[in-house]
Image (cartoon, rainbow, N blue to C red; front, side):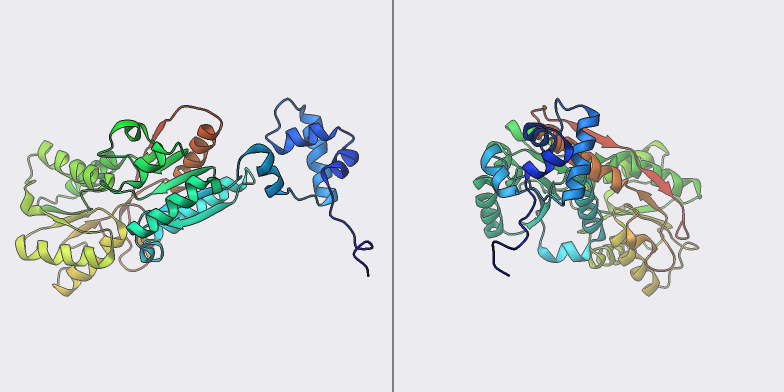
Length: 343
């Protein structure tokens, strides 16, 4: 069969003819549906389904000056993407939320200075319309660089230590401090009186706010809240195990442990088992996140649930608003205590 005999792909003119509307109406539907009646919009969508029309994104980008794609930028080493289940849950949620806008998501990792330079060159060249920024530490310059370059960006988690324009960085976060407070109140209600914590890194919002929530409740209830009851991990299983072993040497009579992530809590359980401490009989353990790690072994973790689906959808909603010309905004979402076997 010659090339002229092959069935040509459907065009926007075919869609307009099938829907009984103008080409301009089809174009307005494809670009958000502004100034189009519901009946005409539905006719166009039905015609797209019938004809099998597929948008030529390259052609559209030449007209609109937009790439019609968004980057999911993880500023962590590559292995973190596979080790920490939270990142995969968030990535899946953002992908699904953007699919409703027919926008593809590009996964980008910038865990080293060289990777950050490559990412910045790519993003500032106009290959994406905006960035969903995940796990940005204090001192990591990429958030400031994106904002200064005029790139619409929404961070997952409260920005800390930001200056200038980056201090107004749009972000979506769970209420880390209140979630920590709820977990520690639960441990106190169980009659525990030597409640230690494995905190996250102090250059992350979760590390700072979850530690603050732990300390606030213990201080309010008159229980010990000194630095001897604090060890720091790096949100990894190994980090949680090392920090818990350190605490057991320093505070052998601890009877509860608040761990700032479920993955670290899994490491904490391994350290407690090795030390012959039963959970929850000898030591009650509470985690944070309600990630797949919370139910990946026995005992299942009592934890604080972060609303990952809402975080994902809100990040996308805020980013779409920025792309539409809205001002930067902040969204803080409530957490929930989930009781299981560890406390």
